[in-house]
Image (cartoon, rainbow, N blue to C red; front, side):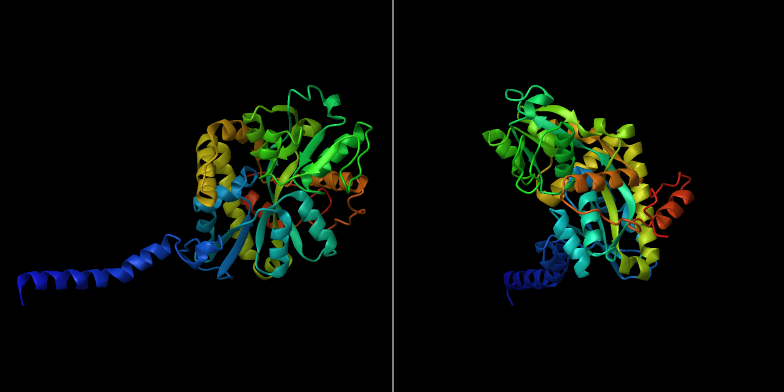
Length: 369
């Protein structure tokens, strides 16, 4: 056999032998069926807990920074040991609740209004709130050429993310306290409340089809980067300048069957929050890296720099503020008087906090008896 032929043959055999390794490497980097549905499994090491996997849902939003950083940096998986963390992102509360109710999600980061609505609709049978995650990060941003004072909102078009969502309820309540009238279903009245997806709001603001928006971060800072002005920070309306924007919820079935897994996740979130608050600049960079990984694009510095400090990361679910938000929704005629007793189960969180030498938190009388 000629030397050139032997060399070519050896190269071909080497390439064939390397092919399975290459395929395995690509799969481990997320190329494959799991990547297509925006899910990924985080590698597990160590002793397995009572469940093989735990499915964790969250939004690619700064107000879900605990999940963004805890998942990306492996802080939650570390506490789970051999139990695999399977994270999944959602774009809205209803789809996450649907996944929880359908049994394809175990634990989720979500806003207070979807938590309340889901708990009430299931007559208290589907979920528990087991921890807080974030406070604040909501602002009223307006076109300064059209609106210069809060009184100028009358007759203007103000966007919120969704009918009955946390920001929508807050705006409707603020309008009512001004003595103005708005139909909660249509949004028509002394102020036109325009329900617009946060992804669309910056374009709507830029085109002039809305005059302002009552929205969470980073949408608020995106509007400011387009020439908008912050006319009101919602924290100014609350005692101690705190109100819940993100909770952690769990399927009651999963909580009953796998309390050790839930405790491990909470240990991971508490440690993540401690790291975030001790390292704000590094945490901001980590959250932005996670957003880039999930959406393909990081936030510009002129957006994330003002947005980040307006969000307070906390383990406290700020239960009293959730109670107030539910009262606002009733007053706005969006929901009937809800029965919220038992919506919280903070026993595992307080166990984790006590072990970490941190103060326990309250359920404001709405906990499991």
